[in-house]
Length: 309
Image (tube, rainbow, N blue to C red):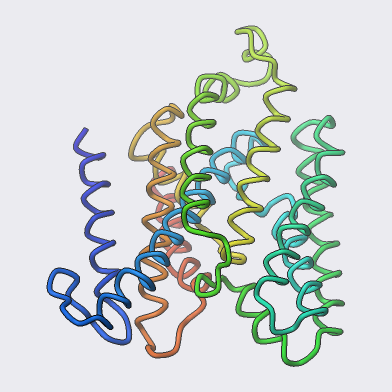
């Protein structure tokens, strides 16, 4: 119980820090001017909530993909959804280089092209589906490189910024992202018992009454849709979906009724911290948040590997 209390206290502390930190440090409990209130509640708070929702969605998707593929190294981008979304985003910029809306629409459409493509291989089993995902990711990388070579110069900065993770230009309303976070967590909890059985192996799960093929299709669609939304909102942000589920299993055990809500909260917490640092370290400029999640995620993941040896 105390672990949950610590997690909620950490969220509150990070939200306060995120509100205060930036090019201009502001005490959120003593903001009197109209400008300070605008910065706090109309600029920083929506961005912090976006970071929390996106991080939680990526962590949930990572937890699902690790069970779906039976691979502890699986993460939200393993099946090429991020690559197809990036290709779609750059395609949107080719037509409207200055439009963030065109980039977001292209990313969402591209992500779903990737999802539909992967769904054709869902019936082949986890190993072949993983191999198909690796090949598709390489294909989308090649398509992306071609599109970047053709992209007008004025769109290159926006494209590279989005591809390294960018929460500053999200066009998806915060309310939609938070609602998606809640719905995704609710769906995950409904499937938690079946996921626990699937960890025992397909034969054991089927013997216990789980329709494994149906469960895999649902997991694939759910995890891919969540990834598509997160990528559309904030670009490609790595390591959140890989590291957080492992860390939460270490802290809360292997049962998914604990792992999934802890991952949804922990992923949001990590991205919230990373985004606060990204817009503060070299203010008024910003670092790509994906760089910071990698800097944080790599040593944490290596530490977790050492703990399990």
